[in-house]
Length: 309
Image: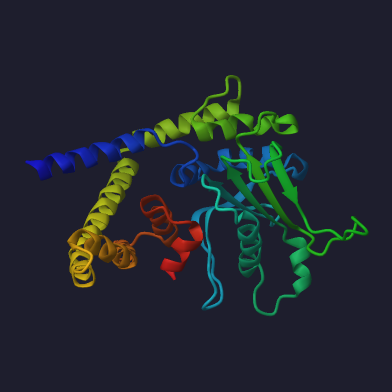
């Protein structure tokens, strides 16, 4: 009866989590951006100067084809428009103080998708790439609504060492959206706050509500959450058993309690690796596994990536 109650409580927790997903969840963000018209309007509000007419390719959780042995990122949303411009859109809810490095790596890896063997490097000039992070924190602490970067010569700003390569970091916590008022409704949805009169924000909110009512999407989400719980429980059970054995062996002089604690600490890495193995066997994406390692074990993204490697 206790086990049944526990399972029912876990199922209810997963159901509640589904009902309360916001745009800040990378899974919900991806499902929303699969709507080409919403994706197009978001891009238009980010880049009004580009006069974007159409989006021709929208992929979520895209794995890039990179060189063997090179860390390959997985993009939340990968978009190409009708002018051969590329946009990488990422939701970021935890500040691991590495966004600049990640953005540079994303730009490098995105280039693998653009040129084919034999192509001239000059073609990069005609294939712009924009990496955009939507953050629920102020990465630079200046209360700007956004921070935009390209690479220019310090002596002559008209000279660029990387034409067509741009990095943008949006700050959803800003107190003043200034000239980015068109994105206010979108960014406030990261906190599930609706902005009256913002047509795009209302369309996205309604889209999220339809997604939550979709039984197939809900089933996939619930299955993932319950599989994650099973994987974690399996890892914990094995970890406790092995941890007790290690702890008893090493901690007899200090006492059984101290020994078990020490054994558990030494076993944590094995628990995490076991969890990764179980989730990979269930065919979850690397991005999803990485996200759950961070959530369930309190790891930084860098620590989670080391375990994934």
